[in-house]
Length: 292
Image 1 (spheres, rainbow, N blue to C red):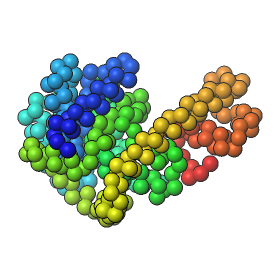
Image 2: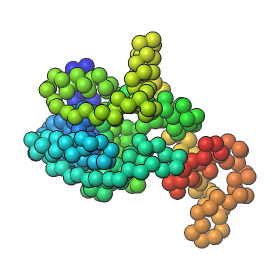
Image 3: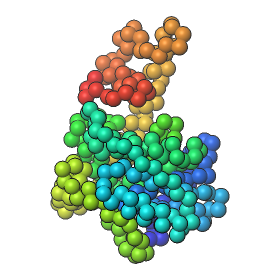
Image 4: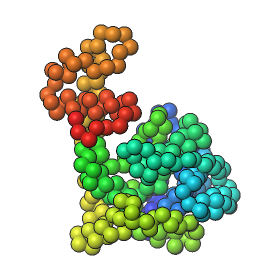
């Protein structure tokens, strides 16, 4: 894939998704780790800003404190942003493993909190996840026995705590991103933890997914297409779930009560009951049970 095509995909996704956000945002904040994905993302956003002067671009680097090289990575990001004349904010977070959550999940949670805190409230946060990340996420959710919502993996545009998260590289492969960096001599850091196969994602990345792509031509693209179909189906179910939840709240007689009335639940089919309970739990940011 030519570099110009990668930028075209990036700009088309950003344009399309920004139009769906109300009120429209003209501010983009790049989550910059210093790895090849986020660095290429920063360069694409920088070009996008030059082509669209009404758009502002900034970056945030989060130090998880999990590597001895963290300070060097922060310095690299600072120098890169200075070179591109992009404002940078940095944050250091403490990552402690929690019950039922992996170290990776806790680090991600802390990273998002830092991104939300340091970025402007109206800014859209750009994340560098790509097609390979999407496939790995799908397989991890499959391994966990996830339902439709989990298997839908990552959406190109999602919300969390009222903030917009945009992933414009989901249809671009890791190899294409690395090729882009090579073609333009774009430097980046290498996180040594990415080679640690004790992490499930790294095991899939190094040992499983390459074999699947070798055996089944276009495997990643096919999984990516399936994920898009699953997301459409999940979107439809969410509409039904919201309708059921609204009706449940209307049935509840207590003012301000946000519980699920048993009398309303019992009027639904079992599948719809389970779906509504999970939807309600999600609305309250509670961990999902393995099965309802």
